Length: 360
Image 1 (tube, rainbow, N blue to C red):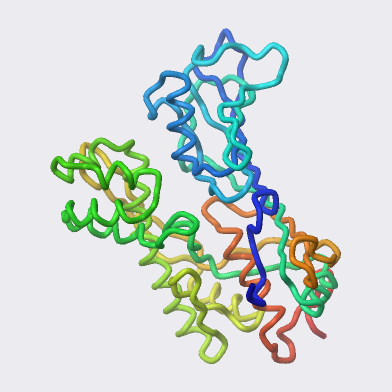
Image 2 (image 1 turned 180 degrees about the vertical axis):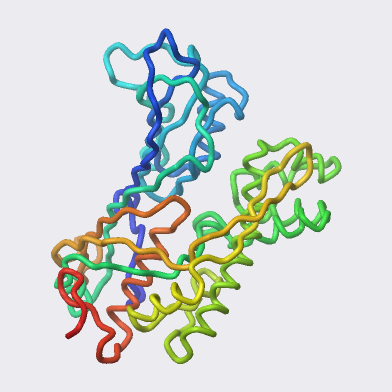
């Protein structure tokens, strides 16, 4: 194993809970049943297909507010039409799968009058174990205790492919936008995504393959293309605003440009608080776009636990991190940049002190 810090060594190392505030009503006044979906080993879109199949619903009738990764233990709300599941008198919920590594569980949350919609999510809370640290780095992180972290708001690698698979979802989206449907199908077939097997076996017109997907799934590939372009734009911004204060990192074949100094992020934020971003939906077999804005830098308070021997990687150490991020931000991007700030040499005035205090 390399000396790099390890994220997501096992699902229990990466816990995520969604923050989605929904108005609740009594059951007689409701049109929708909100359920708490706990899962491991499934993407949200894959989990929705399983839930819909178990309940005998079209996938579009299982609604949600945001996407959660498969390589962790995540909790989020899903909404289904009232009556799709029977009341849960003992509060035990419904286990949908039995596999120890890949599982889904539904529990009652409440009743409402509206479906859940993408874009309504406030954010996510994270509790993460960072492993494979040497004694020095673990000690430096633990000494900080709480960090006022500003980090460049990159889309991280999970936006571009499943764990262990090629990071090329953006190429599917680019081909869709160019009307190159055969290329889009070929790229999708090679992703090892939940839709890849169907794409590989598809023998009809390639455009019909995408027209038959849940529109939220097709939109995801379009959004991945926009995300890749946005990452390139913010890398260029970092280059222009902070000459000599950045270094290049490649993660799963994708290029990132991290900042060497904590205060450099403030200059990026001052130069451009937001950059343009294209949002996509897939309607009537056609991509539909609208312009939006995305923050270049995000701020969060990271609580850091004590350094401890890593029970899974002998001779190394671990720390536990806890923090909250707004919707659309990536915890892995925040953690990678936090660890970079504790390993890359820092100039005077650019370090971090315990409890988030700056140098004198």
